[in-house]
Length: 114
Image 1 (tube, rainbow, N blue to C red):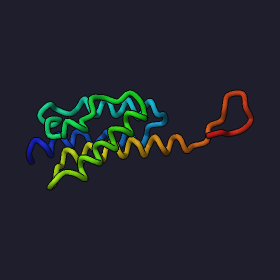
Image 2 (spheres, helix red, strand yellow):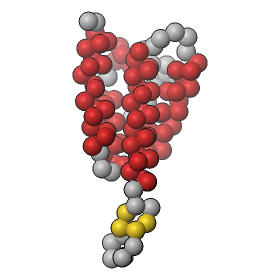
Image 3 (tube, one colour):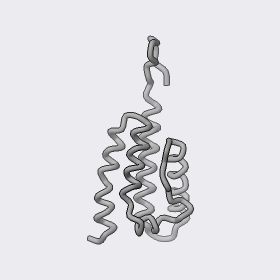
Image 4 (cartoon, rainbow, N blue to C red):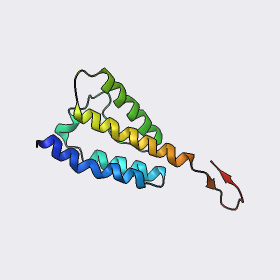
């Protein structure tokens, strides 16, 4: 069990946290904490062109997910850390989509809206 495996395992709880997030901001906060768990030598394995520096909203998260996916497709051979980060950002975007799809009752209104 090398350093990659142990660090990757330590970040797994962030995937569970995503499924429990109830707001877009909660997903963004989880993504920020997730990124803070990456060590510099791990981040160095993510291509600079797609390495997220941070995320402040759903749009930045979607941009990061797309860049990571493109980098994975363009890569040659297995890159476990790139694959892990890509999967996390894809799941985060999926969770935001799920939250946006839930109808919300507007304050003071007797009807639901998206």
